[in-house]
Image 1 (cartoon, helix red, strand yellow):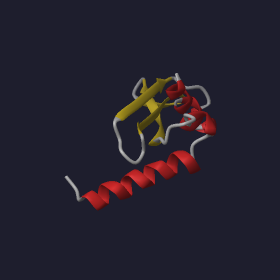
Image 2 (cartoon, helix red, strand yellow):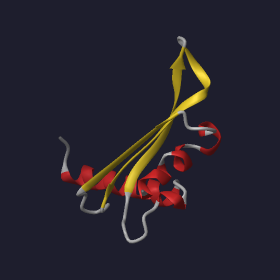
Image 3 (cartoon, helix red, strand yellow):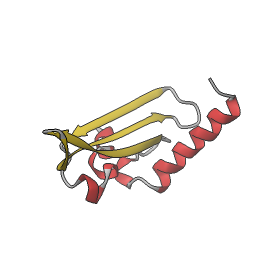
Image 4 (cartoon, one colour):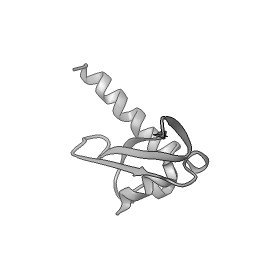
Length: 95
């Protein structure tokens, strides 16, 4: 648990991530999302693969009064390091 002010600060920070750092494809018109995207390499044969990645996007809305969580994970996202999770996983939330 943390203080209410800390929770509000984190909400605002995650809102800014969606609106400043993640491509417009991740945004839902009419909704204020707050969230974070990430990309990770996958271990294949005991080593990190240079071609297999997991892209994730976790968010909630409305940003100011969270009620609905969203989480998307894409294993094997192509070009994940080049385009980032912002393009490979975030656009799935529109579905």
